[in-house]
Image 1 (cartoon, helix red, strand yellow):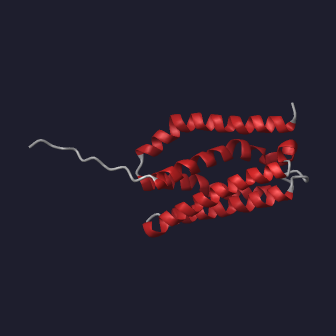
Image 2 (cartoon, rainbow, N blue to C red):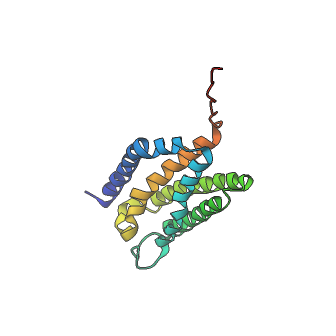
Image 3 (cartoon, one colour):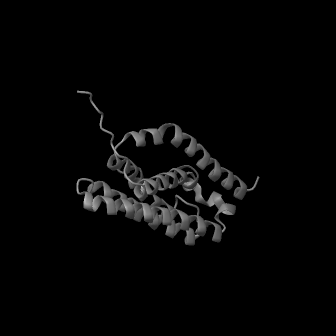
Amino acid sequence: MSQETLFQIHLVLGYVAWLLCFGAYILPRLRSMGRVEAHRAIATLHSFRFFGLVFILPGVVGPNLPPGFATFAAYGDFATGLLAMLALLTVRVRTLFWPCVVAFNFVGVADIILDYYHAVQTGLPAIAGHLAATYAIPVIYVPLLMITHVVAFYWLVRPPARQTAEHHKP
């Protein structure tokens, strides 16, 4: 089986596995939280995206990793991670928190979509072995990141759920 086929299988199954896990364990927990706490939990996950800088760390990735992919992916992840950290730092100032939540989700989704585009344009799936130690990032970590971005955007655009007060009989 070719590197390209293996990479594509891994990528698709990464989404399948995370969707199953997310639906069974993570989404119910997030739904049980308040709106701010759920977005805070998602921001906490994304605050680790500074790790994407590893794509430009010599010795960690193969020497033939396309720079058109690696540099953009590294700095897009770094920017998203910093914005997620900023959201976490501003959680008590809601007028700052919500714009930071929107910003890190917007930058994060754009980064992932553009990384997929650059990967295809540079032929990365055919040379996926050059990802070396970073191979796990796109096939294990990125699917969870994209899923949480989609959920975050969904929750940002829908009206907040109303709390129903219990009606007590006199």
